[in-house]
Image (cartoon, rainbow, N blue to C red; front, side):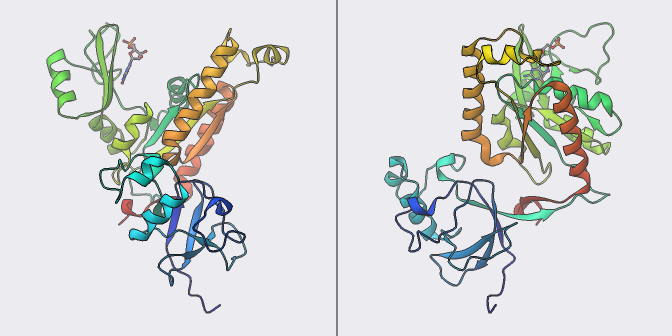
Length: 322
Ligand code: 5GP
């Protein structure tokens, strides 16, 4: 009890298995953790090996060693543990992509709770193949349009008679769209039937200015742009529950289970693969995974998550609140 507990908390961005770490002095008693675990740094007395406990665990294991977060020692330790050749070749880590999951260590985090006068956090949905996040988003917003809203996208396609400027879309010329894209005004954009579509940063801001929670569904590549103190995004990764095989699934078909229509085993394999790929590349940026059984239950679960988001506190990078 002479240990004075520090107020430093980190989120682990990789899985750590002490038994596989040749550099640890304490393999048997080391603290195993998983990506996403929150660890409280207990002592930093030894610059090479800090002591930590996992938040949520009651007991502090006095021999819980794990590589520290800052300083050059980190890179060395981490490299000996995460043994990819690429790691060992790069000498100082310079020139490595900080977004590359292979180089990730820890992120310092703190509890954050949105106060009543503060703007609501941005909610970002990403989804693997078959998740249909746009439909999910529309459904949750339609249930509660006073609290939630989409960011109105820009498009170059002509306005239809029933549509209103600024409601379904911001209708712009091709020149205007291209200029905006060039000036980095979009978080993402793409082409559909020879027309351009895109969602701007400004569109998110204008939803938040009305004190509504803005929900966007984006390709995971857009996460880098959105992870800022301004937006404080809460990232939800929606994965469809993928049945073992098509045949077994149809034998157990339940009401509302027709989500994926006539899918082949290859389709199912592609869905699994897509989820694995997103998880590997972007899992460390995800706050919550939502396994989607069917639209109705996923929608109910999302609604529950959004309600808690306004009431409870969550771990966010310290840089967002400093
Ligand atoms: P519509 O022209 O029928 O309103 O939309 C057609 C399609 O445009 C949508 O199904 C969707 O694929 C695409 N789209 C709509 N908004 C956006 C957007 O903000 N970004 C991208 N990349 N595509 C969009």
